[in-house]
Amino acid sequence: MTTTEDEVDPNDGKISLREAMDQVNLSDAEGNILLQGGKEYRLTKCGTTDDDANRNGDLDHLSQGLLTISGNGATIRQTCPGARVIDQFGAAQLNLNDLTITGGDAATEPGGGVFIRGLGGVNVKNSNIYGNKSAGAGGGIASQGDVVLTGSSVSLNFARELGAGIASFTSATLVNSNVSGNTVGEQSRIGIGGVAAEHAVTLIYSTVQDNSAPNVDVRSGALSAFGSVIAVPRGAGKSCGALKEPTVSWGYNFAGDASCGFGRNPTDKGNGGDPKLRPQPPERGIVPLVHPLADSPLIDAIPIAACVPKGLKAGVLPPWANLQADMRGVARPQGKGCDIGAVEVASAQPQTPSHAGGGHAVVAPRRKPTHHRKRK
Image (tube, rainbow, N blue to C red; front, side, top):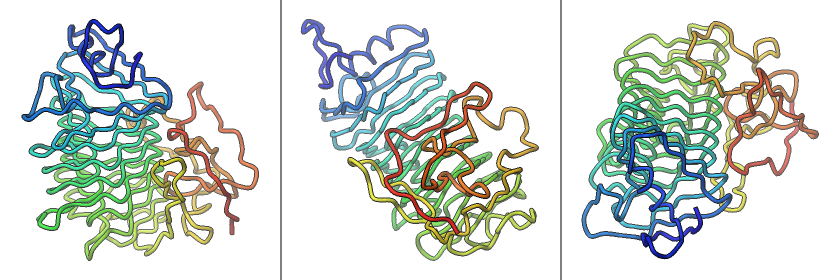
């Protein structure tokens, strides 16, 4: 990238984000787009009709090759009414790294922020998907393939129908991630403000709260979880929908009510009430971070010996995920145990995150705690 402007001019000597996507679309080889660190890329080429050729509106990925967009803390902001941010065609996988996606407005289809039309799915690492809306499902993300989040936040999105945060027609896996403050339309018959999936939802050290009720639902498969919290749905509904399969718990989960099926594991709190989570004030316009208050039952709830779950089947945990650090890179544990959810409350002198197995700490883009809370 040599310019943040949304332009297509082969003779100006510049390469815009839209032109970079055009270059990727020329072949089915693996594509990589590297954004300038901390910059904002505003999509301003607005058309009068829906465009699927990357000429205006959203960014259309048309080739069959894997695409990785590395943001380095950059933001892609849609400014065109009725246009989402990224539209992924074909069977390729999309990787979004260290990036913020916002402003999407899918006026007639699913996926306000990101729409994955093929089965390749999307991996979202260290990123924010916030402030997008959809006339259908998936205000933040809608995908025909698997959705995998690590160290990421999906928040403050809107969907008229269901899955305001995430709607996956296969499965959704969240590790060290937060899905909060997503809402569905008042006329929605289904709801599901947080995460909606067809076959499976897996939560590991993740927080799903304050979404339109229910926070989570799986249509035909199971909810599986470790060290995660599902609570405080908006409205009069339950934390989880009418789950068809028994919940698989690897331990130390917290639900606001009994709807998530966590009662089968003695280490869970399946009807725990208020987890006492509050948003931390936003920093430099970043979406507020949801963290436990000082008297939260989530703090130190996982014994140190159990901070890394046992019994996970091969392939459940993404190979790049590091459970020894929270979504910001703060090391686990900080006290006498690990905290349930995506955020480990930092002690007065934060530790350096461990880099287990040669991996890297999973962090959210440019987020660092601004203050520390005393532990009980």
